[in-house]
Length: 139
Image (cartoon, rainbow, N blue to C red):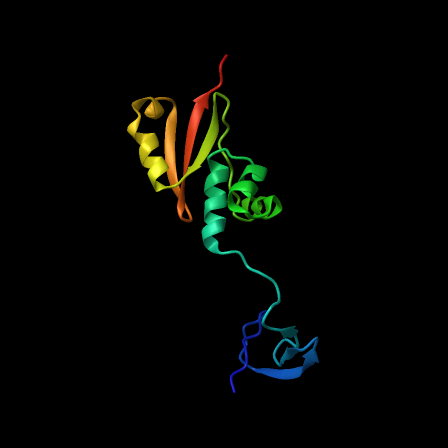
């Protein structure tokens, strides 16, 4: 029978040490650390973490990212702190975004007036596309 590695010292010498809340507990013989595996809780796919950080760098607020991706704005803040991401200062431009399906995106790009301006980026967002466009603040 194979036992898990100790999360503290990564030692292989681990023995069973009872059951708590229907979860098997283990004890490391090297560092005497008690732990259990099979954490209860949900993990968020790394795709959403990457997209949230990209949107943050593009200047979109935490709450807007929450609305777009369906991930808590607190989680986004924690990822920004964890990965030490800093958004560039934007004083002259502000981002606006649209979420479009494939046909809407093609129709939007056909019009030359939609391509003029400060800049546009298109990123995949699940089965849809997000178009971020920067507009100048009027002085």
